[in-house]
Image (cartoon, rainbow, N blue to C red; front, side):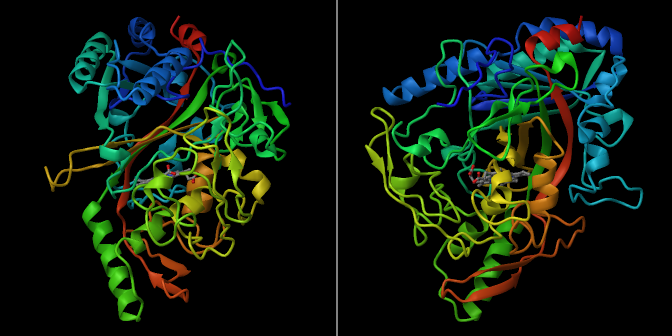
Amino acid sequence: MTMEPRLDLDDIQGHIFPGFGSAHTAVIALRLDDPEPGRIALRPLLGDVTRMEQSLRDKEARRAALIAGMDVPAQPSPSLAIGFSANALRLWGHDTSAFDLSFHEGMFRDAEALGDRLGDDRVPVDWTFGTREQNRADVLLISGHSSRTTLEHAVRKWLDLLSPHLVDVLVEYGRRRPEDKEFFGFHDGISQPAIRGTNTGGEPLSRRVIAPEDPRSAEFARPGQRLVWPGSFIFGYAREVSSPLDPGPAAEPPAPWMRNGSYLVFRRLSQDVEAFQSAVAQLESRLTSLGEDVPEGWVASRLVGRWPDGTPLHASPETPDPAISGDLNRINNFKFKAASPETPIADGGGPSTSVPSVPPDPLGIQTPFMSHVRQVNPRDGKSEIGAERHPAKLMLRRGTPFGPEVAEEPEAERGLLFLSYQTSIVEQFKFVQSSWSNAKQRPAGGGLDPITGQDGTQENERKLRFFAPSRGQRTCPFNGRWVIPTGGEYFAVPGIAGLLELTR
Ligand code: HEM
């Protein structure tokens, strides 16, 4: 039995793990105008910051309500997370040169490497904040609650407390959409790494449902859900290395007050739903004109790698299957290179005693190499770095859609507030975006990621290679931009003790 670390649930911020899971989220970026008074102004907020222990309890309460067929219980007060950019830390006199290089330099300096479109002045043309002194994001607040009104009250209270030393440059409200779908219409937030480690009572933090006698229970929490050493996401704990059962060296905090902390990536991604849908329609008609019989929804689902309800393609290539998408033990159960044989489920771990086998798809016939999920997480499949290094690239995603429904306000802006936690921005988020999504031949070929891949130009030319419905291989253009980064920043999210020390 692998010895897993006990995590400090009272110190780690609860947004890192397991997340807030609230119906409504506010993301507030603040400019730190007066460093010293600003530091003091932040102190009263620290009491509102949510610890992992609380977020785990909230999650358990939501689960219990769901099982009992009851409404999700109203949260007593909004959850809160706080992070600081390298600029904020420097304004407070800290040296950030030993921190993650991307964090130290800031997202603005990374924009080109991330594929954002730059103007002649080298400024990312689509960014609406984070480009100048006046609109820089020094401090980030993330808050979640079941009621939007309660959330708005809390946001106003915090902004009043912080003014005039910290001034908001962005206040964005996100919300869970019906069936947890992002704006292109696909169930999002399904595949998350499970985190190794226990609470103070010695219970695992991520629910393990695979029957313990099955060897896969040592590597997966649920079928297909990889267990990852906590140091990939939280400083001070063993990192993920190439051998899954062995703890790697501890992820050393870049400063003592970053123990139990993490790096947060925030990207405001605008989604042009009409542009995406019309590009999908064009690709459909192109395939039809080539003599292909293209079922409805076939093209869009190949671009993502799942059907809109989340059914993975190689578990059910022809049609979405509610028996798969409605079962947490099946919705993420797939691998690319090897088959996933029938998996026994522990008593109480799910609705059935075993999960059926799923065939592999090493050639990308069902789930194309170019599809979003295959590019951002090649699982056991092909890549230039080797499958044993893939788990170390995983991140904890906490994104949420923002903006009104298309039917309500067709002209309004909408998209995804992308949020991810990791202990290396360079090796995790930035690697996945720059070296995989934005690359034509990596991780395994097939073209630029049709959802988030970008090459710094307006045309954003893609040539997607995939197996058409006839099983013949096709290469088709899929040019354009429908996910447009409009600003962002990297933040350090310390533990509670670290927050106290920073604001002392
Ligand atoms: C507006 C932009 C985006 C949209 C619409 C989008 C949509 C989706 C959808 C529908 C899924 C499948 C559901 C799931 O497995 O959770 C997914 C998975 C994922 N996305 Fe994105 N995504 C976006 C941006 C990004 C970015 C910028 C990254 C990282 C650079 C990213 C990384 C991931 C990862 C790691 C997964 C899980 C893949 C897996 O483990 O199978 N996504 N995304």
